[in-house]
Image (cartoon, rainbow, N blue to C red; front, top):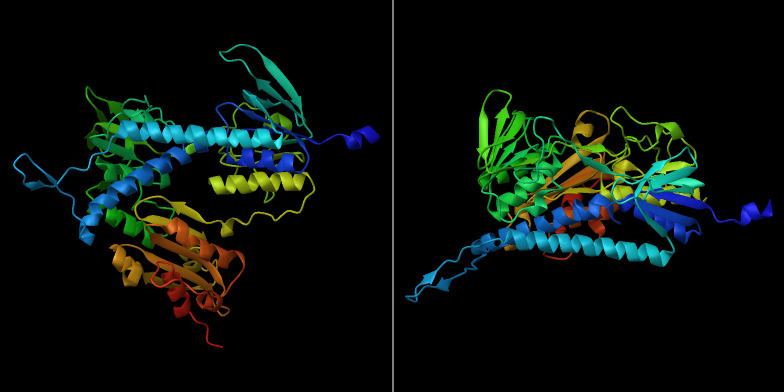
Length: 477
């Protein structure tokens, strides 16, 4: 009996994305014997084919935009022709070089994460993992369809298998003309005319990026406006910027099918209209990678969509099985996956746990400008789900924004009626992903607008708009 208690707890993590990686690191730090099973590479799709490469591409697009906008600040670019006359040079994007660099960065990030796991003492097994009951994982380690298997016993299992792009039978990606967002990085040149099907976060981000890179872009949206799940004011700003930058936005339009032509693609809409382009990106959501990996047999409940049902400590319906990331019913964000992975291990190992509060999660959409949100939404306040006051401050009134030539965007704060406690906020700005943090802190720690406004901000700074908005919501005692 004594030997049983002396044995290290055996943890098997299936999937090495942000959730699996953090679970493995946390488990090793807490003294468990951890094995990580990963098929593609440490970091999973988030690092190798999704977040890292896409945000790197978007950073290039932002730099391209910055060159174009510099003229508004009085910065002019000229070269001289053979006659010695000044001519304005073209801004060109070498997409092949861009894609080579971003894929290299993704691989390097994956290798850095792998090295961190090895240093922590985690055993890494390359292969496809599936559950064999609630206390064992079978790993297929064959390279080309063989039958080599490893069976790993486990006291605790963490499932972090992620999700894959949804494939429509009427618009099957071929990686040459019709793409999912994981396939775009093989392009050697900027598409002449990119059709983007889907106006959610992924579709909007890539539509924004490729417009900046020089593509003609047509965005097909089945809803009234782009980003239908986001703050309405923020979505309106983004759609206006899209159109002003030359993008064609087809609202209330549904693509029934997308087919290749001799030298491009054609999308047929449900009303019979057609849109011709050189390439097409299908951004119509994702599906969890939970099929045929033994979850149901292990007693793990799934939602109708195939997502793993988890509670706020990432525990499934099976007591010793946890799940993290896009394969779960939580928010599909890398930051949330990481938090779930850590929380799962803390709970499984008996350490102190703070259950994840989804309302406190800050998220960002990397369009130009960006949209960042945290806490309760304006829609929830207007529907009476939350009681709050709303204050919106345009960025155009901010002195630093004027200096930088920023014309679009705003800061919006939501404060509890009566107490003035900050319960949410929205930032639309070039660096909204950075500016949302003080609002997230206020939401997490239940600060009042008066407490936020008393903290010093640099003058001039974009963050000053957050303080100004809080000051405008001063609670008179």
